[in-house]
Length: 462
Ligand code: IFM
Image 1 (cartoon, rainbow, N blue to C red):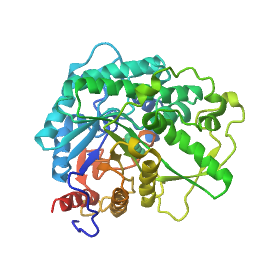
Image 2 (cartoon, rainbow, N blue to C red):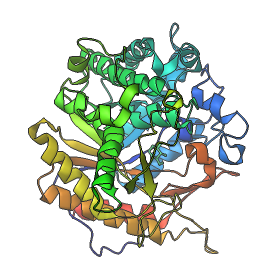
Image 3 (tube, rainbow, N blue to C red):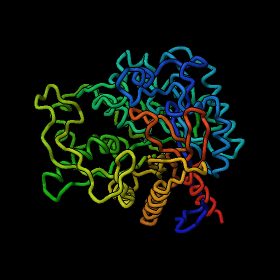
């Protein structure tokens, strides 16, 4: 599967990569001194994850990383984005550092460098040490301080070999899926607790950037899952619903990070939940809004929203994601195995709109995740002919190129994901990999999308 039809062409030096995350692939959950994380607790709580799946073994990447680096090398990527498991480094969240945890990432980094692949490390992809959650988790400011300490330890060991660092992955998920919707660890359903978590994640990001700068890293950034929110109709009510959805998903992050302010639409979005809050301090905006070398964006789909009443009538019981809008299914679009609509143009629109809003304050962008879960089947020939994923990748890379042509400064693209893996509350049932993982044998099988992506990268160099 090497047809070169319609490969988009990117500028010289554009970075092509693949991404994964620690809890989703590593396994070895109780090995070499790793402490428990909130995802161990969550996944081991009956009924929370589909099929009772956990990350205990996952893709066994902890032991099989040389084979996975070989897959990356043969793919021809410039860079590999992985995440570091905080509970491997500081098992109790504070206090003693675990040298075996540091050793694992040093070995992985050395293996990547030997294969000619630039490591890109994410410091927090949701596996908070359980001990910190027991002391309040992201609801409390102390967690941001512990995050800065952990960052200093890791960067102190790896800054000389890892050029690109991402503080947080998708803080929206940490704050709102974790502390409001309850579909991610730690599984809370709160109002002000979730808003405090959002703020403390940003404070933690700022403190981590300081630690990364002190360690002399080449590039520091953050990854956001920004949403393209579209109104269900042209009505004023639906357009106002889009403003609330944008505030909750996007502006809560981009305004402090890129414009040095809190969203001016936060009161209409959160009402009493946000007024008189006491978690913000003088100086926080300057800390959060430090210049970044890049902004990471994870993009998968647009979201269609319509005006709706609060789900919870009693304001005292309301969660932070109860913002008077409802998601509507997008008619006419193909939907992936996640039931997400496939609309590549909205990827271009999101990036162009971001540039229009923030202008020169927008740092260079790396697309740190993009990909699709599909209903993969192993053919009698042993291959996985994942045509829908190939079409998704082709469409989104073409849409990305359109954003570059429109003047958006995008420097890199990482496919999600190298491997099929633990898709959080969906368990192993949803497969995002361009490499199939047979969870019984741990056998890796590159899918057609892997071969397509490899040919696309190779074509850039012709
Ligand atoms: O698997 C996740 C990843 O951990 C974060 N971004 C979205 C992916 C697909 O849901």
